[in-house]
Amino acid sequence: MKNDKLKNQYRINEQIRVREVRIVSDGGSTVMPTREALDIARNEGVDLVEISPNANPPVCRIIDYSKFLYQQKKRQKEMKAKQVKVEVKEIRFGPQTDEHDYQFKLKHAKEFLEDGNKVRAYVFFRGRSILFKEQGEVLLLRFANDLEELAKVEGMPSLEGKKMFLYLAPKKAGAAKKSQQARDREAAEAEAKETQRQQSAEMDYDKPANGGLFANAKISADALKKLTETEAED
Image 1 (spheres, helix red, strand yellow):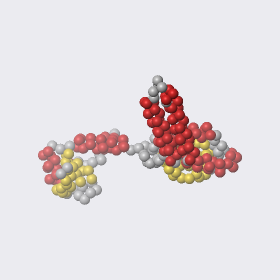
Image 2 (cartoon, rainbow, N blue to C red):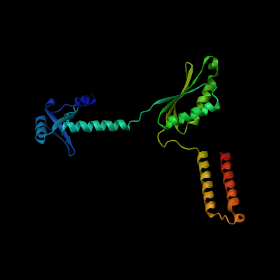
Image 3 (cartoon, one colour):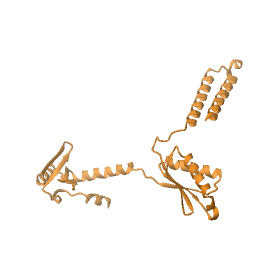
Image 4 (cartoon, rainbow, N blue to C red):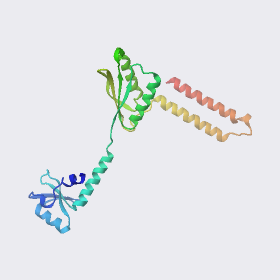
């Protein structure tokens, strides 16, 4: 059925009933009478295929029609493969969601965004819990803040009936930036590991009094102290 639809999309040979056409090829394009183009196609044992009927004059190619349909089908398949299917994933909260449940749902939201999906988070107010709508708004704003490295806010929290919605969209690949605290922490951890590696390579196990495990432990403690100071400054 799909092949028939594609096949019937183009006019070929005698179906082309205009006076002249523009023939395109790898070497460029030429306007000529349709009859002349048909003669060229017949002599080459191929077809005259109209690819742009609304142009003035209509644009055609001289090519085997079966080959042309194959190329079109292949191109459509490649375009479809490149299309990213974006889904909207929902995250539901209650106005008094506990910390464990919050972190669990935050983790899922990160996974959804990393996969390129949008997230619609909402707080559902059941019965008299609508009195806590400000609490729900605070929760959603915290949620948006915790996801700021992965997502951009498409709409601030808004109340619709008994639900307050927050819409988040994934940032483009590579757009998420690490906070300064995260960068400092990673740098300190890397420095600590490198110091440990160098000390381990130089360690003389036959002379523990001159270094060995005691010196390595001291360096590790210094690195940990530096990491703690870095986080305290942030």
